Image 1 (cartoon, rainbow, N blue to C red):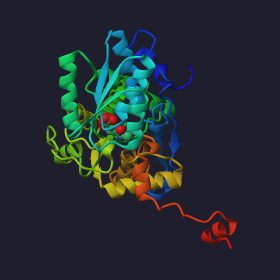
Image 2 (cartoon, protein in one colour):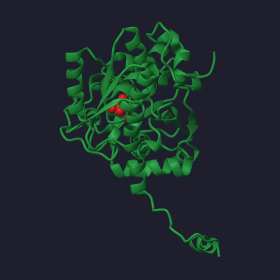
Image 3 (cartoon, helix red, strand yellow):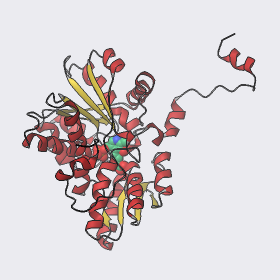
Image 4 (spheres, rainbow, N blue to C red):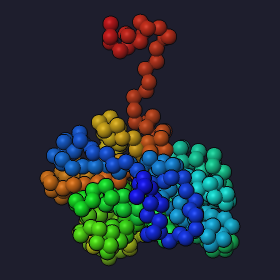
Length: 357
Ligand SMILES: Cc1ncc(COP(=O)(O)O)c(/C=C/C(=O)C(=O)O)c1O
């Protein structure tokens, strides 16, 4: 009962007290009519996680993780982040009134995310290294100093994020989608959604699990490479590079769980180029009115590629989880769009450039 939200599923979440909440979850599922028509898929949907309080799916993990931190009597919380985790932790830490420390890879975090972490009062440390360096350092920092670590190595993060699976099942009911496609970085989200779907199956609410399909940027694709080569585990990408800085992660902490989720569900993993990512971002915005940041558009770029490869069948119902809001990374948008047309402040000048007269 009640509106869709993370805490609608409180009975399935490991938090006993009153949660620290900003009404996260209950995000919209949009039918992608035009993009679907272009690739011959009648049932292509996008679940817009950018519509969460801090603008990404991370809020689902943080509402549970920060609630748990309070329950455990922790004095401060920390994370390393490519941006959205730090933005979300800053928001929920502020809500909870608990000090927040975030470690960011220097020069590789989208502007909107840094703005959020700063404005919501986190101590923002910029590390001369990449995300994987920052994660190693924050784990040491937390162990040495009794600070509560809230990267997705913390299982309470995945507990919150599994509600994406709950909401997809709630929306489609018995007609479970055939496939769920999502961008993969540290691989927490694909692991979490798979867990949620398995719980729904155990509860007898669904009778089958959608194919979990992970999409990575070509320059940062340890999971996709392992799936495509059949390797038991990943080989770490030493120098991950992609315009989709949110998923610029070479050594995903949840790799083993994610490979299991993909293989057990009969899913797959694929890579897309930065160009395909930016094209998908523009298609979503211009054709469907859905504004997402580059990493999120990787799921739709992957949908298109897998469809063109013949991996996705004509009659499949597919849900792409688009994970973060367009406003998170305005610099990339400005770089990839035409400049605004400058005119003198007169109607004639405007009509002239618009070719109206
Ligand atoms: C927009 C967006 N889309 C996809 C992912 C990948 O999710 P995971 O595979 O669960 O890591 C992220 C991840 C971001 C961070 O890892 C971080 O913020 O530190 C993201 O921000």
